Length: 153
View 1: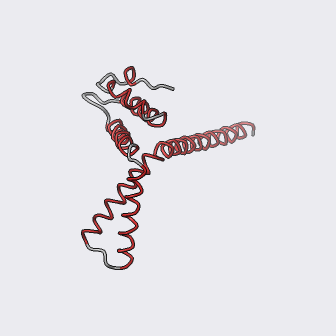
View 2 (view 1 turned 45 degrees about the horizontal axis):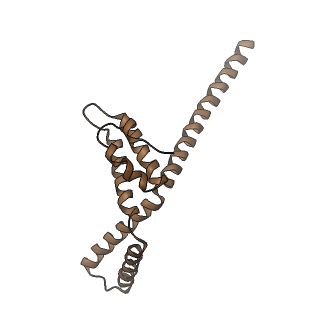
View 3 (view 1 turned 135 degrees about the vertical axis):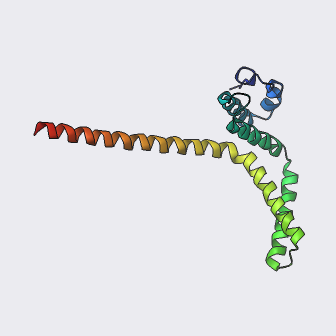
């Protein structure tokens, strides 16, 4: 399904539509979700949720383009730095580098799996919302039945 950013976000994102579509259906879907979120703007600009969503999509676009060879290099560097850490010979500079390498690999993982995890998170949120509604309905029914039984006495 092609997502049109032109109709859902007329504020200058239209030029990115072709680029986003070229990344494939997952990225295109994320961009469509982001465009839909921008409809919840506050006066004078976009909502912070929309900005966060657009930032997440932009980060995923960048990380999704990293070639596998580069990912392998990051993983090798992480392994070397972890070996040094476990051996007790990691310098402060290397410790900072290890943090950066881990962060980079986390961004790459988010680009690969983030959209699926976002969907799962939304499904869980909806499930919890439904459970709360069912609990509220059950409470109302118990109160109704209790009131009805009291009137019969």
